[in-house]
Image (cartoon, rainbow, N blue to C red; front, side):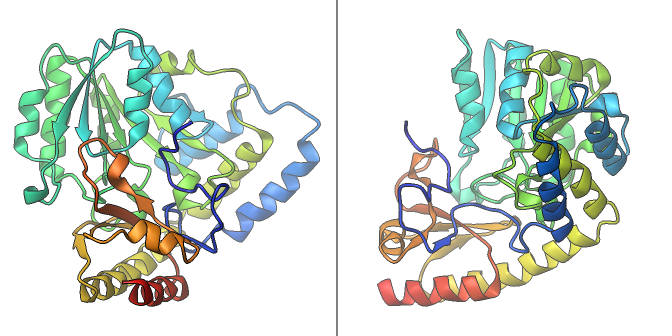
Length: 345
């Protein structure tokens, strides 16, 4: 199996993992406690109706429980949307998250059309994207801020994209899994009730630093939720995912945890950007909790030899060799990365 994601610590000797973009604050203590308590429930099935989880997520976002669909990570929900919509043509940007391509490619008879983001534009999505939203397009995926570039979609353009999809009858999934960790991106969540085909994808994976728990969720109208819901297996959430979701919503309810996270990320983004540029490594401007880089030198191999893992982005559709993504970690970890780069370059 070809590894198409970061976090491959199982086949490498790693002391620091910068390839996975989780919250540098780590998992909140309340969530860790809830996960420990969930051990007492491993002898029973999870709630088939996911009642408490849906209620907690709905309260967090000001929605109704029927407008929430929890999943075993965002990846499961991406696949569920594709199977529900049954598209003949899917529009994707390049580069972007591989999971959209994988889900669409696995749907028999589905054609993938690509919109290439240009380096000369700073990998920013531009107005010309609207012309690709044609009546024969069935489904479109957008990531905001984008992965791996960390670039956000301009708010006005994003609104026009939603309007265009509504006019053309195109289902639109906006992936906001990194939204709460970003400084400037704008959410499309307020528009889900006035757009027939709009889905918003979120996850606690990055924000609560719980990738091992597998917890994502889809937000849309009640009518839209029914389709992907029917594509999921029963009991797709473990008792641990239930516990993480409910306790995580309590942690996030007042917004202070997310704000503290964003402040740390902004400070460390500035630090890393300055230090990397002093090493003649080009940093593409973005707003997420990771940096998108270009270097003529093999940063991946040189750092791996020193036990530090970053994401080599050569495998992303539309990217050539020399592009890398690295997470914003704690200041001490970031200092270790910079010190190691000085030694190996």
